[in-house]
Length: 519
Image (cartoon, rainbow, N blue to C red; front, side):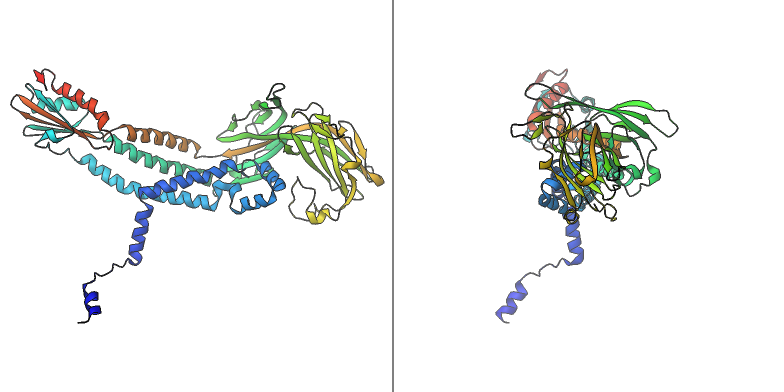
């Protein structure tokens, strides 16, 4: 026999996993506690961008502003779905893997836990002095009396010939198991909210109303099981919006309070009622909540075209450029103007003050001296009838802007327009008038049937994890001989021996009650 044949004969056969083996390995890895903790950490880590990056479903205005200020960064954010973190594919993947991992952890732990509940404490060891906690009791103490006293301290007790075994702390594993079940409850509640709930964003200007219909939303995000008939038929009108600002001191200009005064109809047949909507104090109607999430200014303009007809009249919501002073950029489009469509780029200054270089800026976010700067006026086809969706915060696409005719640029109108003032466009093509100021608010309406179950499951998880951390699994044994009893104890929870010392001493005192001596 050759050396190669001898080595082959003596070498052990290499185990081959095969498909079933790899599947079993993958399942065991996925359902291990280590994997569940990693996935839970990834879920928490994945939620961080949802707090740092503006979300389309919560604040679409900030998303639009980011596209204007840093379009390259915004494109990368959008590529990785960071504007919609909680509905992204990668977040859903982590969510589903964690859900599967938790179920895989709970099923075997439940069977082990049920066996532990049925299992009786083991018999007392013969030599109790070897246990971490030990004491001797001198006096008349029989098995029945020792068992009765330990049961009085809520121990599970088993007796034998001259010995007593007691154990308690089963609620530790109960808390651990309930914690994992509660986590699954949270995930199920979130899933139910995603399927049967919806969210929508809408911008409302003072004096305008809103009805809870799909067509009324600027952005509507329904669950898979939501239809137009699922929405509660309420409506309201925004009568007035007020913001209170700090007027002096280091925090001058800081917003102190936001109040939106609404006239609410809970249903089409219900009478109107007054409601003051504030931040973190949503309007709730049959489980549907409406939150105040943003505000800004909407100056009112009138555009008269070259034929003397009013081509546009109304409020124009402006996008905030500087939050500290509420300086806002506005875009006004008059597609009905004749003989050519008109478009304007404007800047709104709530409290306009002149600067040393001759320009103007806003010195305070409140509406103390409102003025409007005309940055540019254009004529031509704005492309609003092309069928392509357009942003209300952009005058036109770059290709269309190149074809527009500039009528007035910022340097031609150095002084801002105050309320009641107007500017005539060259060539007799029209006139722009600044007629007043209104404010707008952005609202988020949300219906989430999983909100309350998630809250209950979250509270249950906190209580359960606290119980699993505070409760110790421990055992106490008693061996009785004539006129003497040996008591021993130990804990089955790592690191809890120090906390058991005092309890063990109390147990010894209870057992030695009425006895002559304790050593």
